[in-house]
Amino acid sequence: GGASGDMVLGALVDAGLAVAELERGLAPLFPGGLHLKTQLAQRGHVQGTLVDVDMPGAAAIESLAQLEQLWGGSALPGPVRDKAVAIFQRLVEAEARVHRDRSGRARLAGHPDTIADVVGAVLGLHLLGVEAVYASPLPSGSGTVDSPHGVLPVPAPAVLELVALAR
Image 1: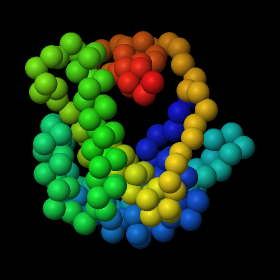
Image 2 (image 1 turned 180 degrees about the horizontal axis):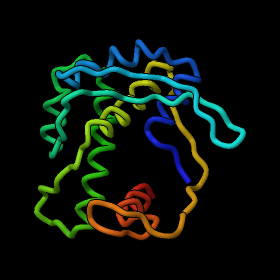
Image 3 (image 1 turned 90 degrees about the vertical axis):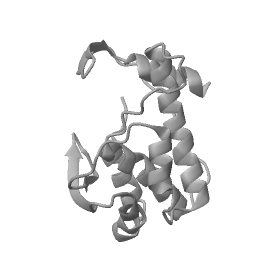
């Protein structure tokens, strides 16, 4: 029902994005280092590139302020920074709604891989000169998924909030 960050980065590589250029753009965000590994992946009859992000010793980011500080001094182009910040602001807003946090200090559970995937996707689109992205309606899914918060329904509450915020 969706695409992982590794799949999105792989699709951008398959569309012509140079892995070395993406790695150069993301590396300054991870002082401990960053390496992108690519491999051919196949799901059914469909093949594509999978990009695995390796960041030894990278720590989780817990707030938007910490995230902005991380890349504030980076060489990320302004539009890439702005779009990435907007995406993470949406994620924080969705999580705040789900957890009924009205304090304005909702935590961003920013796993380094998630940060690399989101910023990498925005950077990759920018480097390829893509000005707009269109998608078909998302399938809703069903069942349950194990999470750090316990068993959650699919789609997860935060996903439903993200969809509601996008309208």
